[in-house]
Image 1: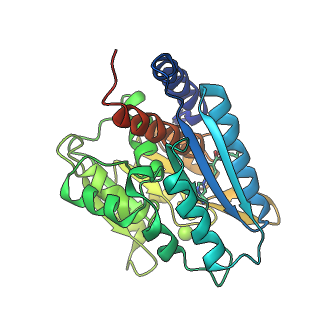
Image 2: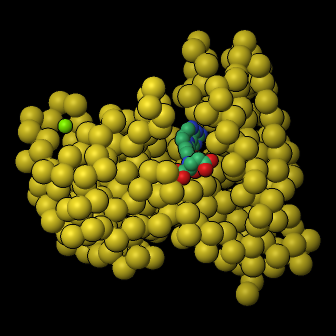
Length: 287
Ligand SMILES: Nc1nc(=O)c2c([nH]1)NC[C@@H]1CN(c3ccc(C(=O)N[C@@H](CCC(=O)O)C(=O)O)cc3)C=[N+]21
Ligand SMILES: [Mg+2]
């Protein structure tokens, strides 16, 4: 069997065209949504990611607000930019690109953000709302994974999802989405302390590999026909390497590749959070 591709690039393009329609409707009411990015330091990967985001904004008609700080910026410098974006009416929502350079306290920066402008869904208040089931911006990567499955007709109801990796942006939060009544999946969260990862993985209908360990998930770990999402990425001498061994494509029923899978979906969900925040601020979508 060769897995069917969960095509994040094409799916993100479809979502962006839907969002462009909603942005046009907002503009007719005199509202232009604006996405802010705060980028500290000169990590090439972070710069490339932020560039991609502004390209996305241009495609759907969202205004871009860029703030760049040097690698030696102080905590006070970063916090001043966050306060400024909190107050800026042109900024509907924004993100602080992570990781911040060493010595800066990312959690303190996140706490300072206006939760209503948190485009990443990573503010402690919004993560708390997710736990409580209160409407809030959702974390972009988990939300993108669910949307990718939904748009390819992969059932989550009753499915056993095995997540690898307990990072805040994916592993810690994705179970909260998958276990909502609307998804009704059962979730196992695995990590480096898991005793027999392969046995856990073999039980999965859906595998979310978000550990950042090159080719961690092998063909023998995957039940034939399972859906496998390659989320983690590592920079190696051989270039960018995902968490899923290429041989998995011969066993899985569905495969979200990396690149071309969850990355573009993450960016699309970021735009969706911006559009939703702008519609909310304007008193709801009026279609
Ligand atoms: N506050 C914050 N929010 C984030 O969401 C966040 C972050 N910090 N820091 C870094 C990680 C990483 N991340 C990526 C998202 C999309 C691609 C992406 O679109 N990748 C393309 C390839 C690269 C491209 O085409 O530009 C792909 O997978 O096909 C990559 C990486 C978001 N992150
Ligand atoms: Mg292994």
